[in-house]
Image (tube, rainbow, N blue to C red; front, side, top):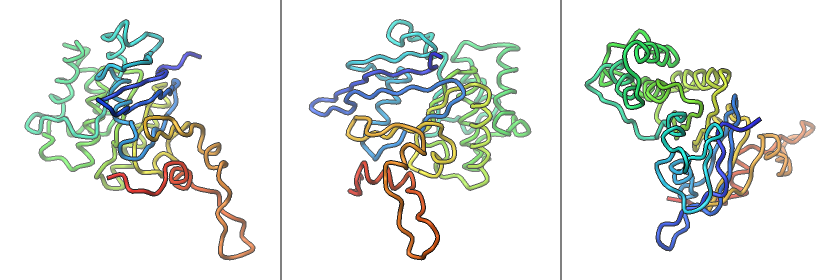
Length: 257
């Protein structure tokens, strides 16, 4: 089966610094791909190239079988981007926010309203459609942010720290939305610093550092690379290494401020 998203050999240099040095990744329909890495590892630059905001120096991106370089407009229409920084109009209603983003993708009339209704329902905000984000909690704003990325019905959803600063209830509501999108056949790329989120959600995990992929696989494949952690009390068996153990073993404990 052809992946909905393929990135092969991506490279990007800024002056003397090579931010991305040959990263490859892919996401299938109905799959959540966790993308992890320390600050400055190349995650943001990779996402920018995948969604067409930045042109790679080398390598290619394919979306639904189409090369981004050959058909950028068609590829970008199949991608929904949820950046870490909120991009909402606080003084417009939730519905108007969503419809504004939908209009940017060429939606209008009855189709725009239908898609807007579906996006609001997907994130549990249908009853707050006429309210302004200025009155929303942080978690509700995050959910509306996701809805704005869903209104054009993309096949691929890129999410950068989508639960930053939200309470546990909102975080679980976001998880439910993402799992429903996965079940609907979307391909999701999920970047976060919260290891437990990736352990819970991701089907496959890619860890990057210094612009390169340093590990890739399922959670079980990655955690099996490290020996079990010894327990201070016997006879309970040693516990399995965690994803955080793997991450620190691969990327080190040095601060990346």
